[in-house]
Amino acid sequence: MSRIPLLIVSLLLLAPAAITQTAPKANSSQAPNNAQSSNAAQAPNSTQAPNSAQKPVKKNPLLPYPGNWIGAFEDKPWILLNLNLAGEKFSGSLQRTRTFDLSDNGEIKHVSEDFVTYPLVDGVLNPDGLLLTFKDPSTQEPQRYIMKLNTDATAAEIKMIGMEVRPGMAKPKPWKLMKVGK
Image (cartoon, rainbow, N blue to C red; front, side, top):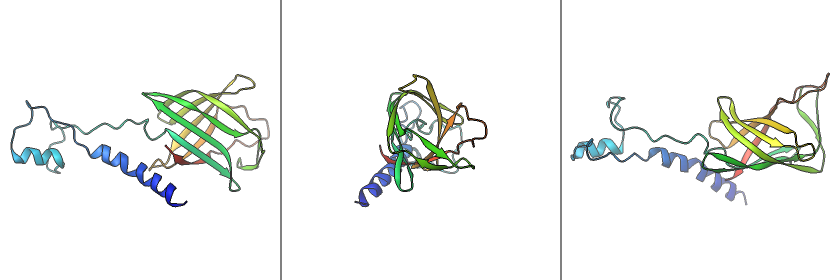
């Protein structure tokens, strides 16, 4: 069973590399028909001028975010994030334990057994990460989180933002999530 997550992670790592290595097609008015130019289109040459007619394929910065993300406390899931992307619009939900307690330094020290689901209202990429807005099903109030990916997009941190913290209560530290599917 441990081979399946390894396969998923391998596919997630290889697919973006294959996409970014695909060179764009040059139109016939810009590319002369000789062997040297076709080799240059296949593999960039370090001596090529940076402003050549060939432009790198621009990768959509939203693509690493969709999927299923999970956070665990004491080896049990306590937060589940499902993100879907259609065009440039996110949909999905956040499921987490109804209540959790924080230690004096802002880390989770206890989570309840029951879960609540928060539907995703909006997801917007900004310089700090992906700003996610969910609707609290009981109060209809928005809850906002910022999600920051690690360098290979297989793990992330999610942090509550704009939430009131009771006096004397520690500010919650970001929670670690692992990507478990696409």
